[in-house]
Amino acid sequence: MVLTTPPRLHIRRPSPTTAEFAVTTLPSSRAPLRVLLLLRLLLALAVILLLHALWTTTTIAATAPAIATATATATAPATATAPATATAPATATATATATTAAAVTCSLSAAASSIGPCLAHTHTVVTFLNSPLQTAQSALERYRVSPLGEVFRRIASSLPPVVLVALCLGACYALTRRVHCTESLLVLRGLGVQTSESPSWGMSLGWGAGGATTRFIPTEKIRDIFVNEAFRGMEVRYYLVVVVEGEGELVVVFPGLLPRRGIVEEVWRGARECLYEKRDGE
Image (cartoon, rainbow, N blue to C red; front, side, top):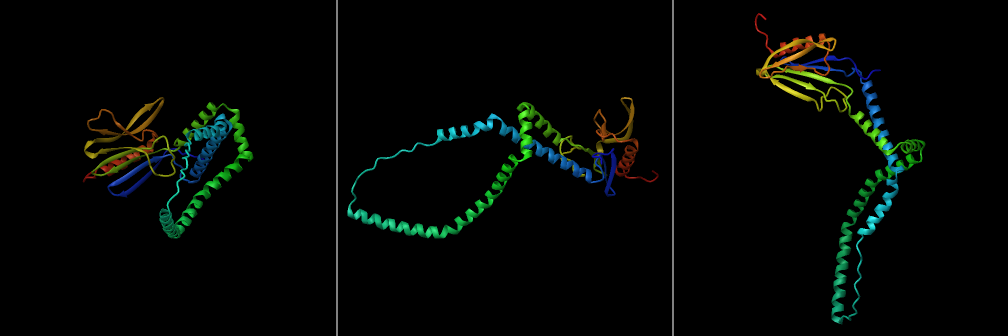
């Protein structure tokens, strides 16, 4: 099972005036893509577990609770107690106060009876939100006492933190690298051509060209499309190039993959047939 294949051509013709020529190294089978995705997920999980083990084995984890306690103590507001005044209220004032207190008590009882269902619903929502957190905490505790957690802690304690962080950053960089490459040429009769190159980062799981670098060349700017033969080191390669009016350099199609001669010539013929309408006698 291979994760990449030699550049191969895929042609789509949605209409007689539109054609897309895509050269890709994606395998035709989906099994290698699933294997690659699984490897990426496992590597990402290993990076997370290593960083967690590094956190639990360094002095930062030991001093974090003390720092949090000191901060909470320093920011806690001081409570001031006001001296009690001993004044004897009058009988009329006491009667009015008792009446007001009774009215307030009745109002609070009515409000409590009306918001009781809302409070119960809020408690249910809070319980529902706390359930995943409790499950995650329980799973984390089980991981800490498991043999796998012990293995990651040993790895984290056996390497300097700087080296371990550098390795994790390198693994994250490897996760973002694109294994497969797809480059395409879209031909629209009467409008022009559009070249597309897939980036060197990001995951590729299909024919999509998300994040690709594209360039559109209108028909009136295209002077010619032809196959150019040139040396690349000690090897002869064939390039599909577009001559653009007003530009001194040629636009190379499929610059990253540089497919074999048969693919280049097939794309050249198909692009010219689609871009330029056939005339009588041609």
